[in-house]
Length: 115
Image 1 (cartoon, one colour):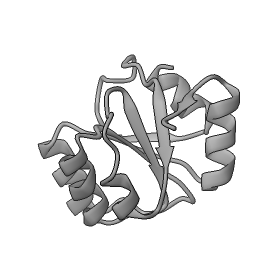
Image 2 (cartoon, rainbow, N blue to C red):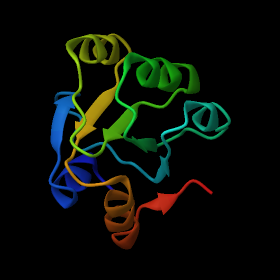
Image 3 (cartoon, rainbow, N blue to C red):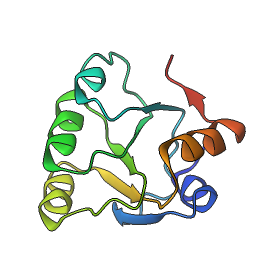
């Protein structure tokens, strides 16, 4: 699924990432627990869906080689988070939908879970 399609389906906003809307995402992992994120082994074409909006989320994704993060529940993405994501070439997306609703919509439209 293309990033621009994900943004459209969840009525999201591309916050950081510029012209990457045509990149493909094949799997998603939803979690607010960064300790769970650190256990992920396969991160190719993986997107993290989370409501934990802080710099620790960006740092965890950096350590786990996750390049795409979708923040749910209308969480505020700070300038510090944006700057850190840009430095690491990450894509940040924001939606007002809940974690459950976001995951359900994307799953129903063909985005595969990691596990």
